[in-house]
Image (cartoon, rainbow, N blue to C red; front, side):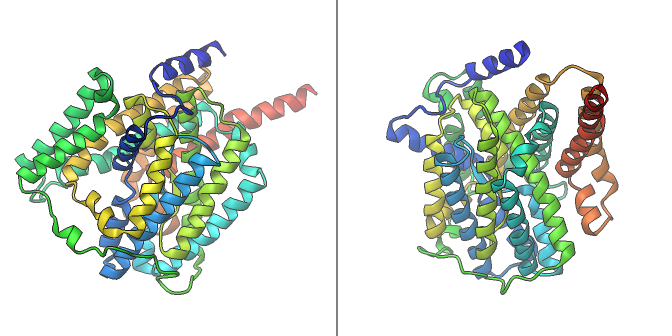
Length: 442
């Protein structure tokens, strides 16, 4: 108990602005912009639409749908439900599933899978079933998942940071490295050694400087703004009536269960930083809000929504833990959803600058996962659970490149593997033996 209090105390020392602290309007707005820039709300739909080869009208619709859903869920969660400074948006864990489904059975099947999965999770949430599972989600589970989210995010981050893959024209080019390295250095120096507004706005300052350098180097594509309309409303069922394929549904449902475990870890990480208890009511409300958002998203052509771990990393780096900037961020997402030309401003930021901003955030997620694991009881069972889960999550995807279907989806995703293996090991090595032992003692 003393160990947990000590870790919580260390975490709260890094937060200068508390959960319920209100700030001047201009500061709240700038902190909100930082949350928006660190999230990848606009990156996932653009990437998925490009990989599937969607026509321009459907690509625009999917981006609008994501912004509107992220805005509604973020705003509702921060004000009424989980009441934590957490941004909600499309999880990268669903990207490969959306792409595979879009190419195989069409996005109407993907929407059907999301629709059914979100209804099931919503019912499990409002009935309190998920809240009662809180006993399973120990620091070993949540720490392992948050650690793996950071490791998983590093792959995307380095892809952006280095300008693609070896062989790409922009890969490790001088202009790419100038943008990515300088952006990261600014974030790291300001967040570690800066004081006052320099530390609090380190990400925003780095973003502005990175965008200015990109404009000087001719890496800014302003035609993206011209191609977007001023006003847009997502279309209801843009891919046609929902269709249901059991293989598509099971794939999405498995991914959804892992998103729940990931979100639980995000809630607990934020709670540890802010010294706020994450009780069953908070968990029930949070997952009900996320699943309701995913239900809405499926009807207007979007993705499932989940809590963003990288924005929890932002809390530690900037020391700003207030939930009010997150409320404003939700309102801004809504604005971007209905006014695509404004939202397109985000797409002006080159990939290298995005990678430069994400690199410190991903590193902080890794360290946050380690700090949560440090809270776990020091026992051989816990060491085995975290070690084996991390080992399998990092190694197994290398052997699943040629597998198809649900098994291929599962074994190619490190977060899926880590979450399920850690939960399974926790049940087999800790929860079930403890219950049997108590039964024997009786």
